[in-house]
Amino acid sequence: MLRTHTCGELRIPDIDKTVKLSGWVQRSRDMGGMTFIDLRDRYGITQLVFNMETHSELCKQARKLGREYVIQVEGIVAERSNKNSKMPTGDIEITAEKIVVLNQSKLPPFTIEDDTDGGEELRMKYRYLDLRRNPLRKAMELRHKMAITTRNYLDKQGFFDIETPYLIKSTPEGARDFIVPSRMSSNQFYALPQSPQTFKQLLMVAGYDRYYQIVKCFRDEDLRADRQPEFTQIDCEMAFVEQDDILDMFEGLTRHLFKEVKGVDVDQFPRMEYSDAMKYYGSDKPDIRFDMRFVELNDLAQNKGFAIFDQAELVVGINAVGLADYSRKQLDQLTDFVRKPQIGAKGLVYIKYDADGSFKSSVDKFYNTEDLQTIANRFEAKPGDLILILSGETDKVRKQLGNLRLEMGNRLELRNPNIFAPLWVVDFPLLEWDEENSRFHAMHHPFTSPKQEDIALLESDPAKVRANAYDLVINGVEIGGGSIRIHNRELQKLMFKHLGFTDEEAQAQFGFLMDAFEYGAPPHGGVAFGFDRITSLFGGSDSIRDYIAFPKNNSGRDVMIDTPSQVSQVQLDELMLNIVKFKK
Ligand code: ASP
Image (cartoon, rainbow, N blue to C red; front, top):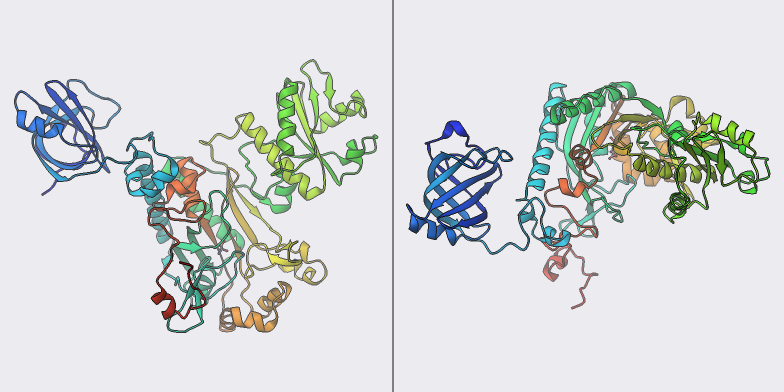
């Protein structure tokens, strides 16, 4: 037996037991007559003591152990005279009797400590060493807990975990597919799934009316910060359901995860129409931990001689409560913020409602006190508040103000990571205009059903058609989304037509699904949660990478195994990819 206990296990009641532990040398300290070693494994750290007087050979052996050596130790559990209340095993130590070196270690390229000295790239290259560190170990534990809690919940609700293939057919879901050449069918290709979307719908046709999978999805997108080319979803589908059934079920799952994993009760899951989310928060994923809703001002702010407002499609603002004492410099910072290219506003108008009840604004020339008071009243502003106003094209200005709202939320410390404010955003538009290609795209995916009452608009005003589509948003982060699907061949065909597919193209790519709809497809719908994202939200971090054991870097590379990489000419020849010849 290499160990009787783990390094996180022993306590006062174990005193005098003879035990065997195995683990890694975290650190050793020589204190003259004594040598101390912190022995670490996944479960914790236990202190080993070597006594020079009583066990001089052993003590000398211990002094030679380097960091990260793997050792086995046999010894007796003793009460510590110097207890460490910060460690769960801090009341005891092991008086070592014998050690066996199970393996040596080179000096690690960075310290295996909570705060390490290793840079990001180095830690990615030696990910297996980084994973030994506590923060990552905790992240993996959290991920496991999220997965098992999800599985238990969905199992209790009667969901089957059914695997769907990874080698599938190219089916656009908004991103580019990863393509896999087939050796046996030359010049033909598989694609890796962007999600199991079509398969889970086929499972509904097959009668498996509650399906889930914690599943890898692959999207060949230009990598933005915190995106991974492969990521994991909690993917679900249900048959014989309406939108509310799905929202209730996955609200239940979310609530259960909060309770079981974080011990947090979240009771409110408000539902907000997409159009309201845009109008009041300038975002389809509003952070509703704080209010600061948009207030529209066209009727009050226009026709007063201020050309910028007069020419704008929308004049809209927010009230930053209590910030009227902002200095010139702070206001300039805000102007710089909205002018950043990522935000793109031209300027910022402010109205300070000073504590003494007077007004100071950047547009005093055009608005008298009464005008400013009327505007302040619409915001329900109080003396001491600061009103910030932007103007321009409706869609753009809303997004800009949405960013400013989040910035003000940060400044006012209204975005507490320990508070969780979920909401469902519902009634998304079905289609989205793609400027670049001058055509409509499915905002969610082409299998999403339009609202029955909006189907007629498909011909006359496609942009106005609303979908039976919804997103779960928590603290301004999109956790997941889904929709009620089309389950009828004709409607699906019509949808493809509006997305610019010819009948032949639609049949070639999605014929299998439309054919299935002709064999008794039940009404169905589903949702997928970003598993990496919800885990990182629970972990209190913005970075999904910390919650993935072996992630890719920002350029989509795995720097540990060094891939993407070249393959041999033999492999290429077998695949008949002879067009590709590598430059030597
Ligand atoms: N397949 C969708 C996605 O990956 C989710 C869904 O509609 O269920 O976003």
